[in-house]
Amino acid sequence: MQSGELSPLLSFLVERLEVGIFAVDTEMRIVLWNRFMAVHSSQQSSDLIGKNLFEAFPDLPVKWLEKKIKNVFILKNYAFTSWEQRPYLFRFHHNRPITGGVDTMQQNCTFLPVKNDQDEVEYVCITLFDFTDTAIFQQQLNTAIEELGKEKAEQQELIKKLEDAQNQLQQSEKLASIGQLAAGVAHEINNPVGFVNSNVGSLDGHTKSLLELIAAYENAAAKLAEPSAEFQAVEELKKKIDFEYLKEDIGDLIRESKDGLGRVKKIVQDLKDFSHVDNKQEWQFADLHKCIDSTLNVVWNEVKFKAEVEKNYGTIPEVECLASQLNQVFMNLIVNASHAIAERGKITITTSAENDWVCVAVTDTGSGIAPEHLKNIFDPFFTTKPVGTGTGLGLSVSYNIIAKHGGRIEVDSVVGTGTTFSIHLPVKHPQIPEDA
Amino acid sequence: MLTTDQKDALQEIANIGMGQAGEVIARVLNEFVTLSIPRILILQPNLIAPALQRMVNSENVSAVRQAFHGSVRGEGLVLFGSKRCTDLADLMGYEGEVDHETELEILLDISNILVGACLGGIAKQINIDIGFSAPSLMADRVPIKEMMQVDNVPWQHALLVEVNFQLEKRSFACHLIILMPEEELVKFAAALDVFLESL
Image 1: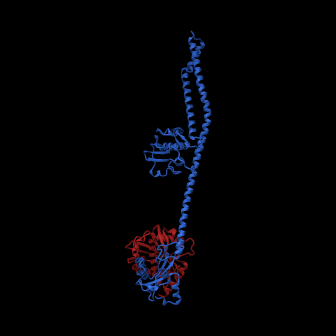
Image 2: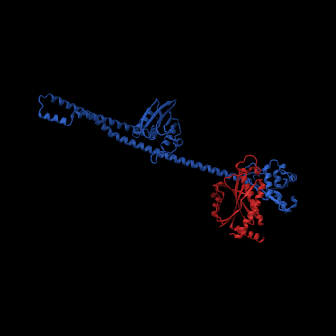
Image 3: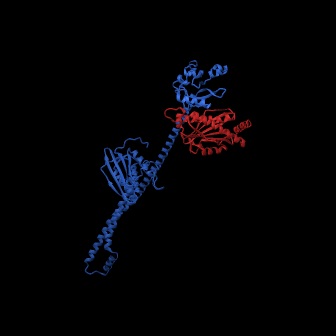
């Protein structure tokens, strides 16, 4: 198949079309090699005609390509290669010597059976199209799609973070307003309790005086030789009202009232300490033992039926903290501990200090946390409590509060045995930008 | 859409065509191949996907489409079920490890051979001339329902010819489907009539 056999127009087209065209016979000898192929391979047609394709181009994947060409001879049908799966057949320079983009010309090839009059395939003609521009465009498109996907994922991540932050904000606002309410109530109770307390004090004095007076009367009466009928009536009244018992009981009543008032005062003080409305979210050195005690008093009603509380306090320095927020954390941990206990158990609160760090550990003898839940427990809205019981925010809020303090919160749990939450706090608050 | 005579003729032609195709594919692959007796159906667009699903009997498929054109036009579809064609790499002259791109190239190559041989076989019987476009990947392990979008096609019926292709030694199998819209089916029927008259 020499170009000379073709009409001048056809041979011109074969020669000058911007498509690689070459052909081989059944022995893989090159019978046609057009200008495009010559230019890009730097091998002239006159040097190649008659040569074995694979001897002339040893870089070609001989086994595969020979099979591919032979199949065209057998099947008498087209075969193809696409740049997407096979970027190139010949390693040619691409047509972008300046602007670049890919390292080799990307090629789509068609293997065309050239049949003779007897319907036998005499040659296989291979056309090679330059798909470099398409490939680069596709590459750019893929990169753009990939970036868009990445951006979308990032946005989704941001939206989720925003939602989490908003929920936490709502939760902490809720807790803050509960704190304010508690402080307001405490203040209101404080006044009446104050004057009741003072009145009871006076009452105590007055009662004692009155009892002294009665005792004096009794003494005087005993000295009279013959009790008159009037005294007889007094004696009967004394028996009727059980005066001896009254005398004893009146003291007990007043003592108990004083005791009760003392407890009311303590609760009011604890509520105030807990909410810390007095010192508006300032970093102050605080005694964590006091914080834990006041928290325990606030939640005592919830805990007392479930567990005995053992305080295992070590010697710890005061910690620079936002005490009201730490109280929230202690409350969460203690309430969670009591929730974990089904019937009756024990909550141990241990404190210790090492170097410039303080550790508070809350250990319960409850049900423990399943290993598959451990990684989620600090996630917002994660809860295993029945619907309507837990918000799933307690530990998440706690986690963030501790993080804000530059500390860390750790959990160690054995299913069926119990759980320990350990809070590690630096004694001195590290300077973290206040954007949290 | 086709008269009984036309349908019988098509079945006969397809049988002979597949026989020839099987022979030539066996020569190409150097393996014993089995081609099933072609099954011929005329289906509405929405029934094609369920029909393919029944044939392939695999949830996810990979598929290659290849257009043919000439006196009649249509598409050849080759569906690969759970059986992958990496096993055929050595038959196609590949050496070394078969990566995903190579696997896809084998998929395209096998499809090209099947479509070319089978359709070529049929076309030769009724003396019509067809050429082929390059095959392209239509689906890479996706459900058949997602692969075919026939909601907005300009035809009411399509001719579907199904052939199963098996390489027994390799436990490899795939399905060849030839699809022609009714407009082309009319031309095809005319070609069948010419063939019948020439008998």
